[in-house]
Length: 324
Image 1 (cartoon, rainbow, N blue to C red):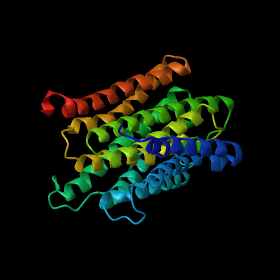
Image 2 (tube, one colour; image 1 turned 120 degrees about the vertical axis):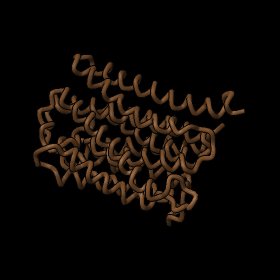
Image 3 (cartoon, rainbow, N blue to C red; image 1 turned 135 degrees about the vertical axis):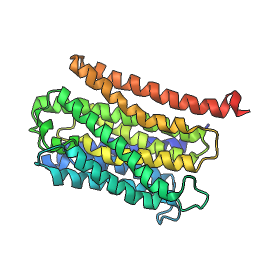
């Protein structure tokens, strides 16, 4: 059995419960302005519960990958700062948000990209390419979420943001907006849940149990967001989680690949960010006035197919005829 019962409880069940409880409590107890900012902090709390309860790394970073929980936490805080900074402005906030993301990812790259002389391509190449690719994923994901809100008839999407987060800060909180946002949040949460679950399996197949456990905790935290979205926590804005979620995904993909000596191909890693196109299925379903459940189902089907290709390809190279 890849994971023990203890690892499943502390690495999956506990992060899920913590994230779910924090989001629900925020939706019930905090002021309208504060509870909009709760989702990324709840997701980070779930991640940290899994990370530290499993003892996945030391408190003081000693190796490049030890910085992962810290840089992701900083990304969550940055997402809130960016949303508040651009709140109320006009124009395409995706550009400014992506610039901030690239600058932050470049700074994170300095910490998580190892200094090995044997690293190929060189560290300098990775220092430029990795933040650029991560920013491309973030820009696409934030664009897809924004277009999804527009397809649902959200007139506020012309405001700052492309960060769905900053847009939501200006929302009026009507019943229609709450229902629309709940669906957007549900799609975003279930998509990240599936992507991290698939990443956990790919990392496990590559022989990186510790990194697989990290991805498992991230998947569980996203599952907590999904369960909370079913309760429609009023004014809790999930779009803010894009910053830390995309950074976490790209960080683990990179760290898992360069630390693996398995036969898992690069394509298995690169397929997982492609699963964000599942949001396009939801947009198409909205434009055709499909019911809410079918919109979420379309996201699941598209993302699950891509994730299955990633996992299947990894399993083929590890256990298939080519393994011998």
